[in-house]
Length: 285
Image (cartoon, rainbow, N blue to C red; front, side, top):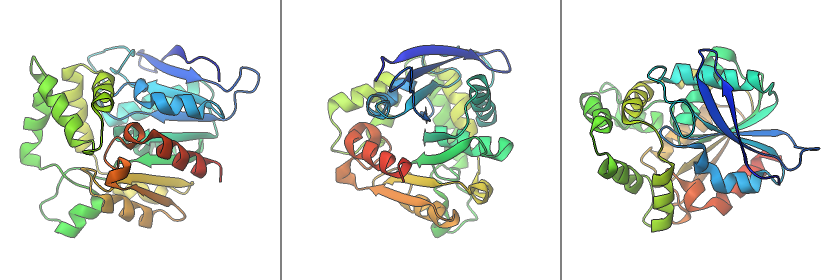
């Protein structure tokens, strides 16, 4: 594996985005594996995946708009613009036949990308703990809410996202990490996740509000490529939502991490060895 390198490109609306890249070698970099972190998280969240996957593939991990080392602009913090940023990345690097590992809001970004542009450039897709919908519709039954993955109430939504506008968000971020890791997570793992939370509060507030209001259930029918859904039994998102998505997408696969296996939102940090093996087994089929 070559050393991880930093690179930049310009989006179609003039924003400079950063990504990490590692290849198995310069002469034979391998097929491209694109890693898309969740909302608020930098490209470094996949540190333990980049190290392993780049032994076999050309690995790219993206700092989304406003994240990590990407430009901090005051516009474009919505899922549809992030989907276009993904399109710009694939275009700028002339990427096709790409396998994507998309975590949390990174998966919403891919859902929207496929809705807008199709999936001709994507070879395989791994969705990590992101349901098709997040906002509760009070007309839905408890079973429907569980299947669709909805956990946020509309009346409480602005209160949640406005928390990122406070002068000090340390307690909020710590609460998020505590809620999205299992009791088995170490202090070092939690601190690593906290260190990867790299987005201005105003951008986080706009982005999370927009993401939670999305509903991608109709996009599932467009997923005719090989898809692996990964979730955790102890995730805030009902694990049944990924079972339901798996049932909607023909020939897709499902893997559920049990709680003792790090099965919450950050299983790639809590249990990187098993996570990496699950992903590689799917890619190599």
